[in-house]
Length: 360
Image 1 (cartoon, helix red, strand yellow):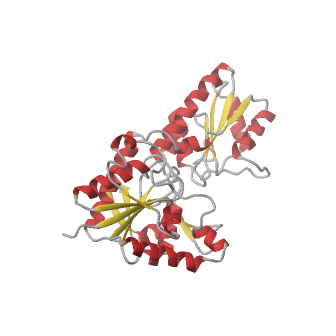
Image 2: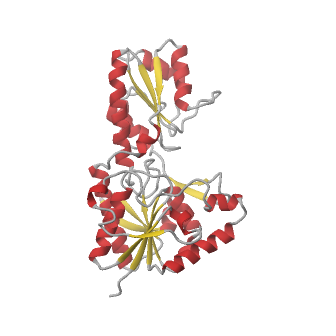
Image 3: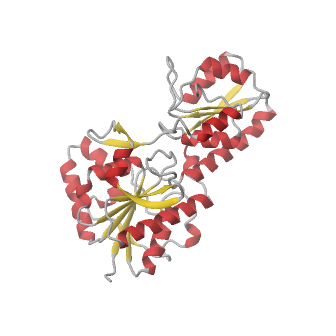
């Protein structure tokens, strides 16, 4: 059997679990005698002379695989990429350079570890990868990708956000004070919903469920305690108001005489040692990706469905999502997933007396 030469690159926002996935790919590939090349800075690293590194377990030892971020980096500001190429009217040149760089690397296969934007973008420009096997692995703290029950990085982000709120709860109790915590997640409320349930929030506001701010204020005012967490996803809106969602909610509470502060965990949600669940998921996805390459598959993405790890075609993946136009890349539609109206956590929140808006 031919010894394959495979590449790995991470794209989009970083998260915990990327290094675990990279390490497990290296291990699976090395056991087959394959050569693994790491492409630094994602597609940025393919523009011009390819920036690469030969990957072995000596380069990325197992004790470092738990760390957050990406050993390969995910790109840097100002670099020529799909977005800036459009701004500079250099799209054809950029695409041609990417394909040339991949040809120069003489890869048999490429594994891209990315979110819904990166994956949708890769499929929209799939001709770039036509001369090799192309396999994607889903990662994002937003958990907004279709056809998979979990993405790498989500579980750790939930833990990070929960731990952040746990510490706030102590000072909240000391000062009879509410904290309005703004989570990441973009237009998807999965992160806020899961962390809100975990910490025992008094209210959870997510983009998928409409809410009445007066009902929210009344719920907080009549809560059995005079302190707690109000979890607000960054994607919510409040008619007639502008600014950061947490600030908008805070102003409404203050106007009602409810003492509160805002808190923004920001990028701490994308950091932290990778949880066991994310390490296991990264390992399963790495194994699935290597098996896909071994079986001759291409233009596929690894997914987890009802406990089973498998691959689905990128065409099916993109078609299954809620298509949204990218504001920065004309013609690109991103495949999104959101909190399902039948998500059992919504019923759990309601049963626990958590205000979640106009749910059923």
